[in-house]
Structure formats: C-alpha cells, structure tokens
Image (tube, rainbow, N blue to C red; front, top):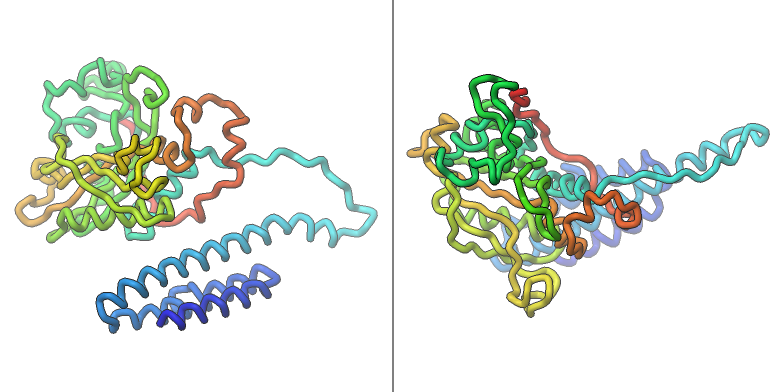
Length: 368
C-alpha cells in the first residue's frame, strides 16, 4: 500500500500542475481528496492491515493528505491573486488604467492562531462555540465549582463590574477564563452526550504586565463528554492537536495539579519541537514545554450542566492562544502583539491558517 500511496501522490501532483482554472482545480480536489476521492477510497483498505502496518500506512496517508490539501490551497490562492490581472487584459486597450499599488492588509498573528486551533479541532469533530466576555459570576465561578472564598474571585485578580449598574442581582465580571463556555455551550445548544466543544476567546485578569503576562489575552477551552471517555482519550486528542499545530510528532506528558473544576487535574507538557528534547533555551533545557491545564470534569460541574455524573464523564482543558503563538514563531515578549508596531506585524503577512472550518455556535450573550 505504500507504493500505492506513492503512485497516487505522483499522479495527483502531475495533474495538479496541468490545472489551469478554478473549475478544473475543484474537479481535482473532488477526484483526489474529496469525501469519495481516490485517497479516502484507498484508506478504506487500512482496516484490513496488521497493527504495525496500519500504524505506518496511517501516518504516511495523513502526511499525504496534508500535502495534497496544502498544494490545493496554494493553487487556489494563485488563481485568486491572478484574477485582477486577467480582468485587466480582457479590457479594451483604451480603458486600461494602471492603479497605484496599495498596501494589502492581513490577519493579526493571534487571529491566525485562533483560526488554526479552530480548524484542527473542527477536523476532529469539535463544535466551535463563542460566548460573552462580560460574564455572570455564576458562570465564571459558581457553576465551575469555584468556592466563594477562592482567591481568584477577589478584586485583586478579577475585573469587577458594579452589579447595580448591570443587573442589580448577579455579580458581573470580565471573564477571567474561557471555562464558562463549558456550562453555556451545554445550556444554549442543549447538548447531550457524547459531544465535543472548543471555545476560543478573550479573557481579562488583573496581571502586572511584563514580557510573559498581559491583563488581556486569549485562551481556548475544550470539553469532551461521553460514557466511556478516559484520560487516555484526552491524551490522544491533545497529542494529535499539538502534532498538527506544530507539524511535528509531539509527545505529551501529564503532571498532577489542582483546578477546582476538574478531578483529577493535571498540567500538560509537550515534547520540545525545537530541540527534539535534547535541551534548548525554549524548553529551559528540560526537553518539555508547559502548554495547558486540564483534567477530568468534576462531578459537581457535570451536575451544573444537568448531566448525570454516575453515567457520564469527560475531559476539559484550557490553553493560551498568545503562548502558542509565541512558541510557534519564537516571540519572547507578549507585549509585542498589542504594541501596534507595524514592523512586527508585517512579519506575519504571508502566514495563513487555512480555510474556516467547523460548526460555529454563539453560546450566549452578555448580561449587560
């Protein structure tokens, strides 16, 4: 089957080089990487292979799939870029006017990372949820099993909004984490297990701003609930995510930790993608990079979702978008993202996250 994959790649590349317009490109996509295309058809035979051969062929097939998808995107972008020139050539000579070259905008590096995260999890079947940044305390704290005397609920850590000016009843805050989306997404979308949700968004904390801390930054929250979901399932999902995000084989390890909304809880480290765990400045010569907090959803949180904790269980995780962007691009100062320095931002003009993917749902509105 390895030879079949190699032959398929050669044939696909040869035909892609001959594609001359958008309609032919779409026909190529359907033929090779569409749902009923040649590559998916070939992969249906993987299930009949032995375990070792299945692992080798599966890895090779995934690499080929990404290669063909990237080649398709590059070709598609070349058609889009050349469209204005073709239009000019089609105009009568007397009507052609040479316009001044204008500066072209591009997405912010944080936006690019958010879209990249969304696309990867959407490909794994996660629903993409969005929610309010001005949040009720019951979603930001109470429903997440965070007690009223927890230090994070104080004004030293949280931006409080005068409740009288908003609702008169419920404490209202600028959300300190994307974790409220666990409760909101289940409530708003009326989800029943099994389900998987990913929720990126902006959060706020009373932090002293320095090279690694900001008072406003971005996180992504993940949630998976079902009958037989285990820590092993979580570990597999996260390893697949980071391997795809960094385009390298990544190993993850879990270290025991405490978060009120999970039990057990753990910190997640990934193998350093820069030194192959030999030790470098990025991983502080340990071979590992801390990337997120996670755990199995606490029974009290499941109850607050109206989900039976005796029947269902699942995992939850939260990571920092800004930190992922810094790691990926070798940025050592988080303040650069919001400095407005055009010299810094121009470095990302050729970056892209791929087409927008997945099911997007607005999981609630601000109490304001």
